[in-house]
Length: 197
Image 1 (cartoon, rainbow, N blue to C red):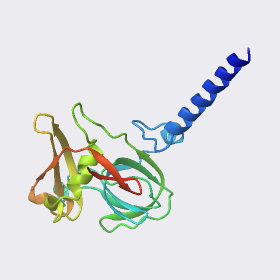
Image 2 (cartoon, helix red, strand yellow):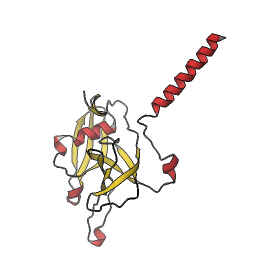
Image 3 (cartoon, rainbow, N blue to C red):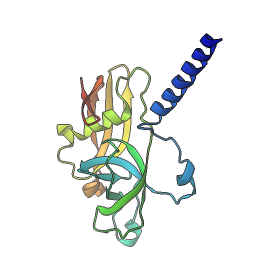
Image 4 (cartoon, helix red, strand yellow):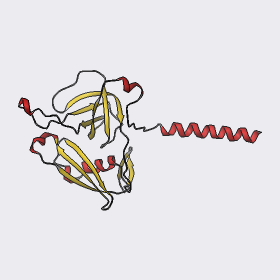
């Protein structure tokens, strides 16, 4: 009888530990809980980071050419109070309602951040977030001031990722940069950031 209780208690502890551990660093595929009743937040890729601030750029552009504006305007915003999202992550951010600065890119204070789950295609070692992060750090992207991530593609035959990006500051000129990233296993290097093995 004592043995049976010991097994039940051990199973209970194991379940509690596994449930608790899986919640850390949690990502979401859809809004849930309190966020589901909120208006849509600002969505996009994290393309730069400074201290606890992140630059988020929406990959879908707006066309203001009918009113003599840009034909490709990519919404972009610096969010302070954002210590967690890693470079390359796709996020949705809700602000705390404080006034936002409007020069491009805008500035706001984040209140809630939902991070989309990274995707690892069949045959890949890296996630899409790892590949985007590597592309943003690549010499091919060093002249891009405000990166717009337009697409990510993985080719299992060649073992490479192609990240399509452009500069939001010169988007009307139509130049798309194809950054090729070799698919390599990632190792944690510091503070939760990942690098090539």
